[in-house]
Image 1 (cartoon, rainbow, N blue to C red):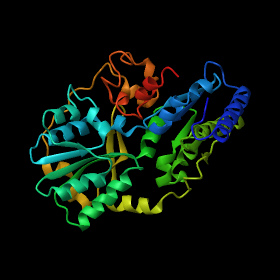
Image 2 (image 1 turned 90 degrees about the vertical axis):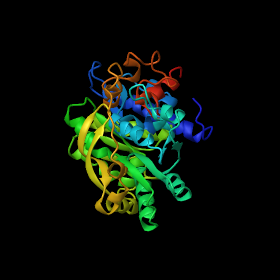
Image 3 (image 1 turned 60 degrees about the vertical axis):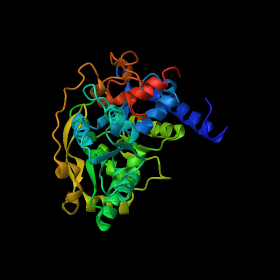
Image 4 (image 1 turned 120 degrees about the vertical axis):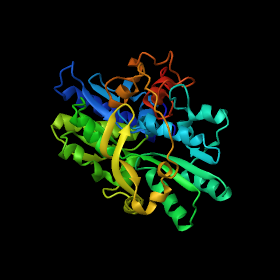
Length: 368
């Protein structure tokens, strides 16, 4: 298997870790019926694992499963219904990342609303959304703010600018989420996971120590990982080694990008603009302090409070197993809709929409 960034270095490191993992796996006294199960909670990890065929290279008693690491996938139906309701207002422009437009909701989507005349624009960042508001002062511009700790600081920075510059026709649907509370909840309800591959993007903001609780409270090995195949293999090796040695710590395997303390400036920015709040996660439920709501000084930028949209959330697609995929209970291919009724061209659930969704990754790389 060629490594894109070099003929030798990357390939050799990747292969070396895979060999080490195999050697350690042989020393694990796990029953063959109970493999060592490791979960990643980052959509970029999920895509890389499928892209490089890492699952197929591992020993039979090492199993990788995906968790709730895709921000589009975990954005609940209610948030999408609110965005759709706002998009119907003729004086309003809704700005969103592209993946959100294709998420289905009761036979509708933001894409279909756009095709029917709603002013819905795809942006690459909240800064682009604010620029629309500056360029078109007669229109109200609402940004659908989704994502984890990685993207939330940029939303916060833009809101600070909007407040300082008195941009009164700009607001957001605050739908950001934070990773530690949902990890605690999943493990507390007995998710059968023996170790956690922690998201390097999130840890770059929060610091590696934000995931120390996985070992200290949940008593599971954890490793912060980067996104190249050698990075992921290194984290898997660290977790397998901990299991073999009966240890339980949080290892930072991505030190070139992640410090123990993280980005303290971004953390301070988040504290100024947002406050922790309960949040609904698609297919998973509601978890305390797992979302970010606007703090008092920024409450005027809350689009839901400003416009009070009237909406109904249609019942979820019952045959879709996105919730079980996000919990790691099943693999994407175990869903009865996967690859037949549900494809990237006609997604039935959010996990098949986003490029970082577990179903989309499994479908794209199913032949590799």
